[in-house]
Amino acid sequence: MAELKECVLVDGIRTPNGRAHKEKGWFRNLRPDELLTHVYKALFERNSKVKPEEIEAVFVGTANQTGAQNDIARLGWLASGLPESVPTNGINQQCPSGMAAIEHAARAIQCGEGDIYIAAGAEDMYMVPMGAGMDFPPRIANYYNPMEFPMGMTAEKVGANYNISREDTELMAYYSHARAKEARDSGKFKKEIVPIPGHDEDGNEITVESDQWIRENPSTEQMAQMKPAFKPDGMVTAATSSPLTTGACAVLLMSREKADALGLSYHLRYGGGVMAGFDPTQMGMAPLPAAQKLLKRKGLKADEIDVWELNEAFGTQALAVLRELGVEENAPFKKTNLWGGALALGHPLGESGARVVITLNNVMQTERPEAKFGIAMLCGGFGNGNASLWEKAE
Image (cartoon, rainbow, N blue to C red; front, side, top):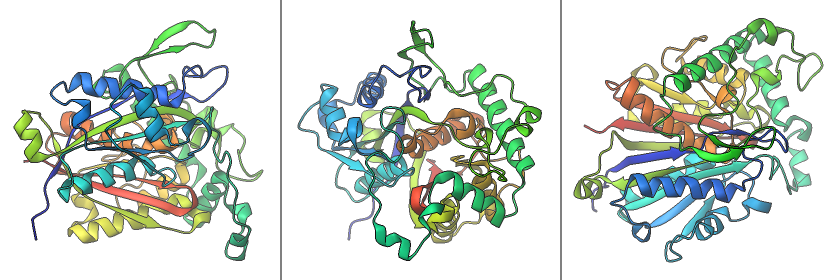
């Protein structure tokens, strides 16, 4: 049996994350497939040695595959004027969809099915609202209380079951915004964000170069005054919940052999991934078993991982996952989300799983170049979890 090939991450690009709002969203006049076009175009411009027709396949993660996102993998590629000879595959794992797309592409490379793949993620939570067109199977009530399925309620349940305090989640939100602002202002996101046209709140055409949700002056005092968003006596507020967001991203993956032949640089190689399931009424904890299983399979311990990217769906679940893993106790984090997380950057569902890998790559390449191992992970609706390991390519 042939040895597995090495898969390396050559490049990753994303749009800024915009607010999903019909009047205030910077991308309210763009379709999600158009956002994908911008990242595809930038990916090929930055990597001119790679021709579109040479792509073996394109995998695109999207959480809500309906309306403007119905088969966005194929239609977004064709609407971009790219070769019809290149096949596409839409991936749905709820929020981890973008990460699942990367893993499918990486495994195909490892198995020798092809040398060049694109994995992408896209979501427009204004044009295609969360849960649009969804028809729950009535029989699921035989096993779970459907009233506990809404995301906010799962976050409340996790907070209560894992003894997470509201104050600690607000501290986490504060540092998420503060670090995102510092990263933005110091130009750390410039390598991963491609500027694209949009419209400001007054309808003027603008060039969008940074994420819309980052707060200029986060305040724990103001957060403490906010009312609970999901339960009258709850702890989860808008400040400690990831906001409704629009965005897209794409990653160029190659066999190491092909990347070397083309003279392309890379910093990370794919170390493996794990998908895991968890109680859907506590869906935010799903990264925990995914990361635990991944570490066990690779013979690693949590403290051997140098950098972590954890999608911050909610403050309660993010803190609970990190504490249960033994990675972090409280913000400011020492190894996790060093450039901020989804509480500040936004969470365009199907995009986020790929976005955290792109950011992990850039953090490990620039801020922590000595780092050997990094893990990106996130939870998803109905108890989906995913974690992927990336290793410095020596």
